[in-house]
Length: 623
Picture 1 (cartoon, rainbow, N blue to C red):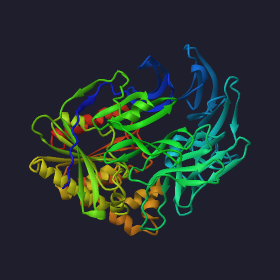
Picture 2: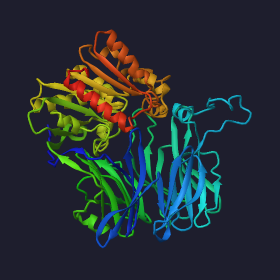
Picture 3: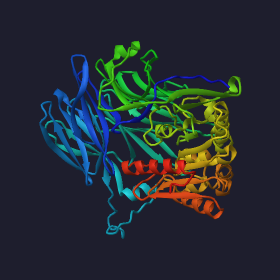
Picture 4: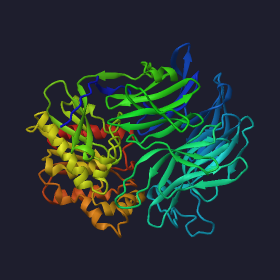
């Protein structure tokens, strides 16, 4: 076993749970960030201005808004979504607020050319067809691309509005018949939008739609790659984007990297092809991109591009998001033991590896326990498959081991998780392992190949071996073993329960009968891309599925699900609950009436932790 330890200080919990979610923009005198503030039943978004006084960055104005973009001379344009429409208002550098535009629908992004134009990406409310028998009913009528989520939200199409700074005249932009994804950027005088087309085989093809200054519209869709996350620069004719290889043959696996497309759509170049799968977040100058990618349990920051000498920008923690402007680089850093924290410094200081100061956003951190990262390799040479695991331990003798499997499956435990946080369980006296099984990001092609279209043997089988090895190493074989996860993580918890002899399983929104889930899911195209259609590839779906009888009745299970889940139908948890009880097992099921796939409401999250912690202490029963 190849084990590398990464010592670190440990946090037990984050104080007020204000969530720092993204960096909107960075300038030499001001950085805009978005934070989500918890209430009783929802989070409220605010945009916080962080300003510089000499060399010290500190909090300035905080404005309740969903989106924002900086304008000239210190002004900021904000968008606030309320009751089916969006109010846009300007706050001047002196703090004077003025409403300028109200748009129908929910603003989902603001893009500026840095001068006199702003484009608002707006999800418009659903409108029925003229003369349809359903016009005066609550029905949503689909001809194609039917979606539970769209019906529940009564979503209409994404629209683009052009706003003129100053006069604030506004007009709807003709985007043709393309379906937009909501991604947008500005490059070389062109508005660049993410777009998507549906294929007859159930898959989707993601590309870019370019709106030129002369009113012309161009599209780029590639057979081999999906293109997403457009990243422009007003002075550049190059568009950076994330290229995702589309598996064509059953032996193909996906991978991602930075690609560049020209605004005239005549050129395409794949810039990176490494294990980091890095995606662009900024283009500070023509052909030079700031990218973020995962590698062995950490999200790293790079400078790449056809006009750049590739190098990594050192950072002490994972990079959650970043923006660059002038000589200033602002990044949200995080790790499984550090809640998202804003760091702002000069580009030169970041590149040298200097210690970048954090901006005090009023977060309180409590410390305790131990924390390390380990790599586990199976096989040798080119056949070696690496996986990773963060291990969080209490200060005293542990009561047992809790394993958290992440969702995805193409995700990783590189950042702090509010939803699946290990530290409440560490505080209760348990060792918690954050398991990155095969197909996790940052472990190279071999790890993806091991699990692609082979979830039971390639992913679950390897995950079980990694957990068993850790349990032996920590001498915890005679203590509780509790397996947890959401979505794909819940699937893994249930799939490994018998082999590992789990004491209890906690699963949220877990897909079990994969063909049944694929046919009903709003992301059925993702299932089709990996496994093929359910009509033509049913045996592959069946071989990777977990069936109710495979979870021993001797293992108590706690199940939860959002009633409005449009990715994994709630019937998956309901069916398992009924079968497990009928087999004589102990099972509880909590259905959240106001949640979809993830748990998002603060009160629900708190109740979930209280329920699970009480159940663990009572051997599977919360009462």
